[in-house]
Amino acid sequence: MKSTNTMVMEKTLTIDKPSVSDGALMWELVEQSTLDSNSPYKYIMMCEYFRDTCVVVKEDEKLVGFITAFIPPENPDVIFVWQVGVDSSQRGKGLASKMLNELVSRTACKDVQYLEATVTPSNVASQSLFRGFAKKQQTRCVVQECFSSDLFPGDDHEEEYTFRVGPLS
Image 1 (cartoon, rainbow, N blue to C red):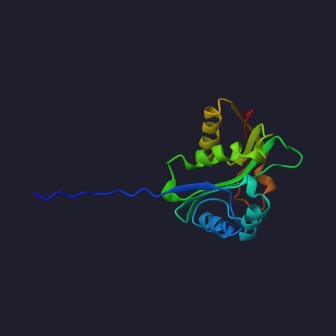
Image 2 (image 1 turned 180 degrees about the vertical axis):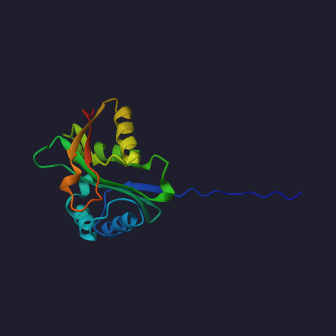
Image 3 (image 1 turned 30 degrees about the vertical axis):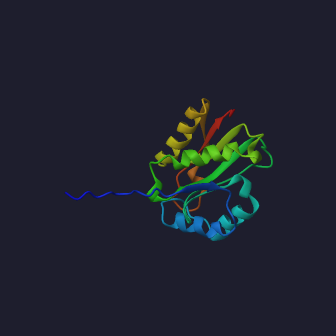
Protein backbone atom coordinates (compact mmCIF):
# COMPACT_ATOMS: atom_id res chain seq x y z
CA MET A 1 0.00 0.00 0.00
CA LYS A 2 1.32 3.36 -1.01
CA SER A 3 1.42 6.13 1.62
CA THR A 4 0.86 9.76 0.76
CA ASN A 5 2.25 12.56 2.84
CA THR A 6 0.37 15.80 2.78
CA MET A 7 2.26 18.88 3.81
CA VAL A 8 0.23 21.89 4.85
CA MET A 9 2.10 25.15 4.42
CA GLU A 10 0.95 27.85 6.81
CA LYS A 11 1.06 31.32 5.40
CA THR A 12 2.84 33.92 7.46
CA LEU A 13 0.96 36.90 8.84
CA THR A 14 2.93 40.06 9.57
CA ILE A 15 1.59 42.94 11.62
CA ASP A 16 3.24 46.30 11.01
CA LYS A 17 2.88 50.03 10.50
CA PRO A 18 1.62 50.93 7.03
CA SER A 19 3.58 52.54 4.21
CA VAL A 20 1.90 55.00 1.84
CA SER A 21 1.61 52.24 -0.77
CA ASP A 22 -0.65 50.36 1.65
CA GLY A 23 -3.29 53.10 1.39
CA ALA A 24 -4.57 51.88 -1.98
CA LEU A 25 -4.66 48.30 -0.64
CA MET A 26 -6.73 49.42 2.35
CA TRP A 27 -9.16 51.19 0.03
CA GLU A 28 -9.45 48.05 -2.15
CA LEU A 29 -10.21 45.89 0.90
CA VAL A 30 -12.94 48.34 1.96
CA GLU A 31 -14.45 48.38 -1.53
CA GLN A 32 -14.82 44.57 -1.33
CA SER A 33 -16.56 44.74 2.05
CA THR A 34 -19.58 46.25 3.77
CA LEU A 35 -17.47 48.95 5.46
CA ASP A 36 -18.20 52.63 4.86
CA SER A 37 -16.19 53.72 1.86
CA ASN A 38 -13.83 56.67 2.10
CA SER A 39 -11.72 58.18 -0.66
CA PRO A 40 -8.42 56.48 -1.56
CA TYR A 41 -6.78 59.74 -0.46
CA LYS A 42 -8.02 59.21 3.11
CA TYR A 43 -6.21 55.87 3.37
CA ILE A 44 -3.02 57.20 1.78
CA MET A 45 -3.10 60.20 4.11
CA MET A 46 -3.62 57.99 7.16
CA CYS A 47 -0.61 55.88 6.14
CA GLU A 48 1.55 58.97 5.67
CA TYR A 49 0.58 61.13 8.64
CA PHE A 50 -0.75 58.63 11.16
CA ARG A 51 1.35 55.54 10.45
CA ASP A 52 2.31 55.17 14.13
CA THR A 53 -1.37 54.76 15.04
CA CYS A 54 -2.43 52.63 12.07
CA VAL A 55 -1.94 48.88 11.66
CA VAL A 56 -1.65 46.65 8.61
CA VAL A 57 -1.61 42.87 8.46
CA LYS A 58 -0.30 41.04 5.44
CA GLU A 59 -0.41 37.37 4.54
CA ASP A 60 2.76 37.04 2.55
CA GLU A 61 2.36 40.24 0.46
CA LYS A 62 -1.46 40.45 0.45
CA LEU A 63 -3.11 42.98 2.77
CA VAL A 64 -5.64 41.05 4.88
CA GLY A 65 -6.37 43.52 7.66
CA PHE A 66 -5.92 47.09 8.80
CA ILE A 67 -6.83 49.64 11.41
CA THR A 68 -6.88 53.37 10.82
CA ALA A 69 -6.68 55.33 14.05
CA PHE A 70 -5.39 58.57 15.51
CA ILE A 71 -4.89 60.36 18.80
CA PRO A 72 -7.15 63.45 18.86
CA PRO A 73 -5.03 66.54 19.68
CA GLU A 74 -7.54 67.68 22.31
CA ASN A 75 -7.62 64.20 23.96
CA PRO A 76 -4.05 62.83 24.11
CA ASP A 77 -5.18 60.01 26.40
CA VAL A 78 -7.51 58.59 23.70
CA ILE A 79 -6.81 56.50 20.62
CA PHE A 80 -9.74 56.87 18.23
CA VAL A 81 -10.23 53.88 15.94
CA TRP A 82 -11.71 55.17 12.70
CA GLN A 83 -11.96 51.89 10.80
CA VAL A 84 -11.14 48.20 11.20
CA GLY A 85 -10.99 46.12 8.04
CA VAL A 86 -10.50 42.36 7.84
CA ASP A 87 -10.41 40.37 4.61
CA SER A 88 -13.09 37.67 4.37
CA SER A 89 -10.34 35.01 4.35
CA GLN A 90 -9.36 36.02 7.89
CA ARG A 91 -12.72 36.56 9.58
CA GLY A 92 -13.37 34.60 12.74
CA LYS A 93 -9.65 34.14 13.46
CA GLY A 94 -9.26 36.94 16.02
CA LEU A 95 -7.28 39.18 13.68
CA ALA A 96 -9.12 42.38 14.64
CA SER A 97 -8.37 41.75 18.34
CA LYS A 98 -4.70 41.13 17.54
CA MET A 99 -4.56 44.42 15.65
CA LEU A 100 -6.14 46.31 18.57
CA ASN A 101 -3.58 44.77 20.94
CA GLU A 102 -0.77 45.79 18.58
CA LEU A 103 -2.15 49.32 18.37
CA VAL A 104 -2.44 50.01 22.10
CA SER A 105 0.99 48.47 22.79
CA ARG A 106 2.83 50.91 20.51
CA THR A 107 5.07 53.67 21.84
CA ALA A 108 2.78 56.25 20.20
CA CYS A 109 0.04 55.07 22.59
CA LYS A 110 2.11 55.17 25.77
CA ASP A 111 -0.11 57.91 27.26
CA VAL A 112 -3.37 56.45 25.97
CA GLN A 113 -5.86 55.47 28.66
CA TYR A 114 -8.92 54.93 26.46
CA LEU A 115 -9.75 53.42 23.11
CA GLU A 116 -12.78 54.93 21.38
CA ALA A 117 -14.70 54.13 18.22
CA THR A 118 -18.10 54.96 16.85
CA VAL A 119 -20.35 52.07 15.88
CA THR A 120 -23.83 51.86 14.36
CA PRO A 121 -26.56 49.79 16.07
CA SER A 122 -26.57 47.24 13.22
CA ASN A 123 -22.79 46.63 13.34
CA VAL A 124 -22.88 43.69 15.73
CA ALA A 125 -19.37 42.53 14.76
CA SER A 126 -17.77 45.81 15.83
CA GLN A 127 -19.85 45.96 19.01
CA SER A 128 -18.60 42.46 19.88
CA LEU A 129 -15.01 43.40 19.01
CA PHE A 130 -14.89 46.40 21.36
CA ARG A 131 -16.81 44.71 24.18
CA GLY A 132 -14.56 41.67 23.87
CA PHE A 133 -11.46 43.87 23.85
CA ALA A 134 -12.63 45.53 27.07
CA LYS A 135 -13.20 42.14 28.67
CA LYS A 136 -9.71 40.91 27.69
CA GLN A 137 -8.23 44.16 29.02
CA GLN A 138 -10.25 43.66 32.23
CA THR A 139 -11.77 47.11 31.96
CA ARG A 140 -15.05 48.77 31.06
CA CYS A 141 -16.76 49.45 27.76
CA VAL A 142 -19.11 52.42 28.07
CA VAL A 143 -21.51 53.09 25.19
CA GLN A 144 -22.99 56.54 24.64
CA GLU A 145 -24.88 58.26 21.84
CA CYS A 146 -22.51 60.21 19.60
CA PHE A 147 -24.01 61.29 16.27
CA SER A 148 -27.74 61.12 15.62
CA SER A 149 -28.91 59.89 12.23
CA ASP A 150 -30.31 63.32 11.32
CA LEU A 151 -26.76 64.72 11.15
CA PHE A 152 -26.00 62.57 8.10
CA PRO A 153 -27.14 63.58 4.61
CA GLY A 154 -29.79 61.33 3.09
CA ASP A 155 -31.92 58.82 4.91
CA ASP A 156 -29.68 55.76 4.91
CA HIS A 157 -27.16 56.34 7.74
CA GLU A 158 -27.85 55.03 11.22
CA GLU A 159 -26.93 56.88 14.37
CA GLU A 160 -23.42 56.31 15.71
CA TYR A 161 -22.64 55.33 19.29
CA THR A 162 -19.27 55.90 20.96
CA PHE A 163 -17.73 52.78 22.43
CA ARG A 164 -15.19 53.89 25.07
CA VAL A 165 -12.92 51.15 26.39
CA GLY A 166 -10.80 51.84 29.43
CA PRO A 167 -8.99 52.77 31.41
CA LEU A 168 -6.32 50.67 29.72
CA SER A 169 -3.37 49.33 31.70
